[in-house]
Length: 135
Image 1 (cartoon, rainbow, N blue to C red):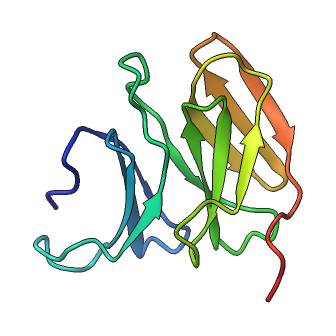
Image 2: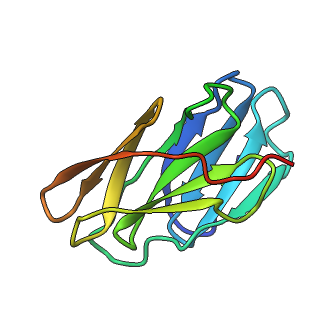
């Protein structure tokens, strides 16, 4: 797929391996149907603050959540934070502020724990709480 107008920073499969998510330097986060043709447009776009600092050259999209149902994913952010998304909403449902002093460039999520790596040479682990009300 021709995915982004700027460089692609990260890709990740969802937990069912049916969707692929790509994050671009221009601040776009897209979802793609894995088994669709390569000329099919992205299925969804999510709001992301992007990585406009030249030093922030990589990040990761990570699927998991406390419920373990694969309906949420986390993305590292230049704002000293990680952003948690629901597959059902274009905007983040939770912003996890970390104690780090520089952009977060990597994230990993297991159960209730979210780990972030930062350009300030630190790693932080945060215990998550469910932020999205069930409707």
